[in-house]
Amino acid sequence: MPAEHAILAEIPRLRRYARALTGNAAEADDLVQDTLERALGKWTLWRPGNLRAWLLTMMHNVFVNQLRARPVLVMADEDELAAIPVRPRQHDELELRDLDRALARLPPEQREVLLLVGLEELSYDETARVLGVPAGTVMSRLSRAREKLRAILAGDGKPQHLKVIK
Image 1 (cartoon, rainbow, N blue to C red):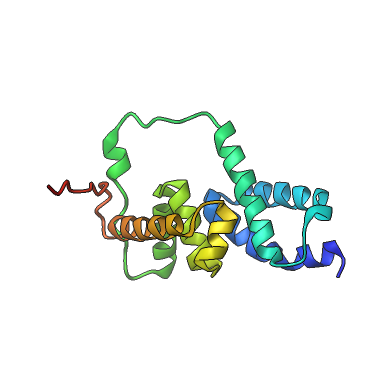
Image 2 (cartoon, rainbow, N blue to C red):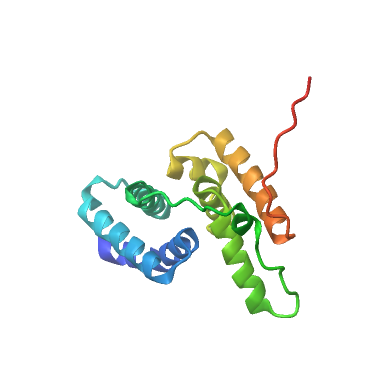
């Protein structure tokens, strides 16, 4: 199968993952375009196997590079960080909006793992290869991401602190 056809089949998943990573449709489209541009330029380096994992790895690397290039924003008011709208139960659209906002509040490394395992249905090992971390790191990040996401959606946006056990 020509490179273009194989890659075209993965675009919907790339767009979905990029949208979830960035939280912004325009930034997601830019991320997908940058990823596709890089993939086509490096097509000769791809070895037959899991094309989706290869593309998601590339997208992850592009996303991380873009994050590193951005200036760091500091929120002056901590109350703004803890405030998130209470999730109304009567409208699915509002629930999706709240989920999107809650995902945006997760640290990037936790959000990436949660999206790759939960949304893209990659295994822990595939996720570890995409992100370039050990499988144990994937599992611990996923556990922390799920716990924090539950807390945010429950209206408790305060960070959970580990207890010191003597």
